[in-house]
Image (cartoon, rainbow, N blue to C red):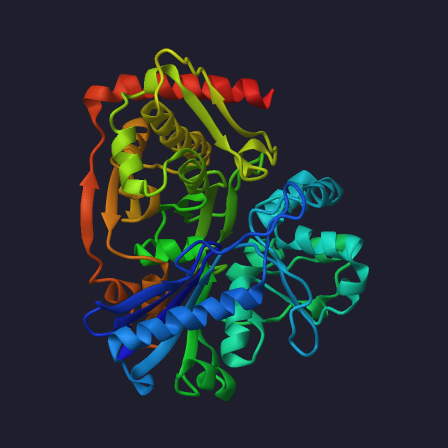
Length: 495
């Protein structure tokens, strides 16, 4: 008996088959092998074609099925994870009307800011737990004003994972977690937000029916079964945005537990057991996968857009051909803590929430041609990313979170000793790395939704810890000094 998980990222689409009884990965793969393109017709824009996600899902899926030799009838449940906040629009024939406006597109910031003021800052935060900001509702408002012909043809709006679920099952739905990440959910009233719908003038009919996060949301259609070689009728029994799902993958369900990722963007995600919010809306609060009105479980999400994308930019533009990320990490390690006074502000991937939606760009400070090398530049870049995490966790701590341990998958920036040691050193938190990823987590969560596992403890009992990184107290003052210098320069940049 096997469980199948898909993770729809902005760089690639991953597929993973998990053997249900042992919890072991039978096979995993991803497509494409180079990063998927993000189209930016104008500065601050970022779009992808949803059909591209589906095509790469098929490629990754078929590779997994070939590797594993698993028969279609042995797959008992499917789970989906996706890049959060993207806007997908389809017409009555369920054809995509325009490219998806994805998470790092900042064109809708003015729409969210106007809504925040019109609804009222206190009311918006106390009901939505966020400002409408640059999220899905604001993206839809941009389409309504700037592409009215397309807007008039919309049958349903979706998030990226809802689109994949539609392609699998033929039905359209959205979870409460999805509605909350789009800033459509009123936590005080426990329903779709009248404030948001009325202010933007959205028809309620544009929103899909609500489906459960865990539970049968639909079954694989005959059309999808033919495309993927699956058995028609296989249940899709879980879906969640990538950050809640990453927390699920690391068995983070309870208040006080923390998960992190550091891919294209970087995230620290903690679970709160009470309704709360940042008064400046610099971090986001959404429904976690196990949230109920009676027993709140809210995910506080600190997101840094300019994370791994800075590292990949350096690799493409400053490293010689054939130089790998491992080579870059080794070179960065040759530089000392603080990179000889060189600092990097990493915010070059659109507006940043922790800066109250300002887009200040990436900047390099203090380069001295006589003392600095590429090693210093690489270390300063990784430190800049870590320091942005630290800056955000200070906001989370002001909300009452106690960050003493951070769990993460052994992937992306966490593969760098400089990155993980700096993160432990500057936050003074223990870092635990696990052998898991979003697709594997979605597969196991599908087992919960299908009733194959009785609880999340059972589903994730097989989770394997790879490494523990303790804070190096000996270097505490060096990390703190480097961070304070970085923070001072950030303050100057913000103005």
